[in-house]
Length: 158
Image: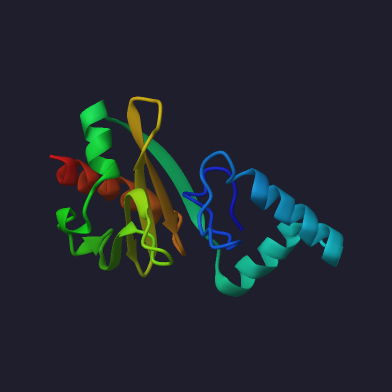
């Protein structure tokens, strides 16, 4: 499931793999309506059943101040500029600045470990960048992941 502020929900349609901030709430809402129409089930019930089976996902977003120059630098960040080997005590699995499906620039960075990930992207019209964090099993661990994400991005922008 995905929705508003989903860090670029992915839906495959006519070769497009990514939705921007203007669509990432609308399309999942329409998908939820279709799930209800086809199955007769509330999508929330379906999600809770999936979370019981696979585990819940915990999420948060924080905003960090950034000037225009820092936001431009973040949007063009190269994965090699992120010099870390661990995220919240776990080995890094992947650092992305381009989408795996079509190699399009994501306009920021996504860093993943087994237990969670963060994505950092500049705000288009405000003086900050956004850090999205997802944790797959430990809600208390999400705060550490977000705090480390801030440090990692600040170091990459320095």
